[in-house]
Length: 363
Ligand SMILES: Cc1ncc(C[n+]2csc(CCOP(=O)(O)OP(=O)(O)O)c2C)c(N)n1
Image (cartoon, rainbow, N blue to C red; front, side, top):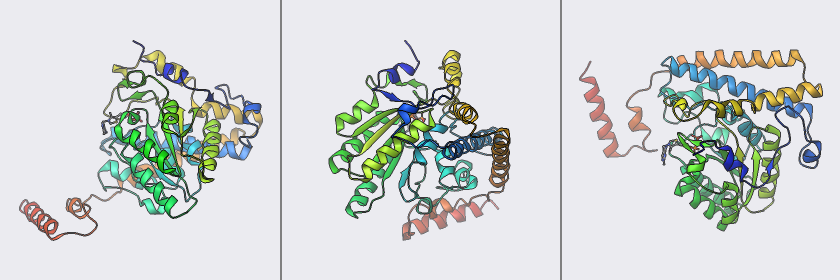
């Protein structure tokens, strides 16, 4: 049995690609979709490099015992930067748990991003401030929350759009199908963004479903497209087009971005036990960051000074991440009770006080 996720992608409808792995831009495909300027490409490149360096630092922090767990995003930078940069700041995002690059692009700070993984807080950042909801480890649950929110947007006659991220594994959850169906029948202003990285921990996509996810969405009545998820310009163009259609009152949409996580599922996982080396090597040749570096160089849109500046900004981000993470205050165990409900009930107060008395008995 093949464990290579590529066959699932091959069965998909036309997969949009604007830049190939050698950094060559397909001018004809891009025409009418995207005004490809040096400024746009430089910005996306920077997002990806900073996001990758942050992810690497968080991985190291976990290995040194500073974080309880980390879910890496290595290789998924284009899918995230390309899509989030296609949204307006007031568009709402419902992520799963691996959207670190997208979160940083939204302005969420390293500390806010890491505190949940350090066990220092229950939800880390304020979703209202960033229009970016907190992470959920329960697969696909956020897709239903997102549809509910999008229905509210429609009732308010507002013109913001909701985007929800989920994985190929999450698409096998009933919640995801319910969300697609409910979005379609209510014409909710929502875009489902699937980062199809071919694996749900150790289960390959080929063992989860037989047809492309984009096809499944069309069956529910959604608009759907398939993109090369390692091509940041293709992702950006496809998301912009889809978001514009949805904002203008078109049906909800789904974008299936074919990508690959070049690291394990989490710091608790050892992908060498189920993925073969050749598969990883094939995807390394499709590195999303390298492709953009080649494009920038070939077009003369960036020189060595520019790349050095981005690299030094990434180092600065890593240093800040480490310092701020280690300085996070220890949480109080009582907060577990305080964060359960918005307003503490009498019963909860009794439980909390009982627990605090129990803790004090150890002093
Ligand atoms: C409802 C539910 N079932 C099972 C799990 C265990 N689980 C955690 S991550 C994961 C695989 C998710 O794969 P995918 O959705 O493709 O996202 P990826 O982690 O690859 O980004 C599973 C099965 C869970 N967290 N929630």
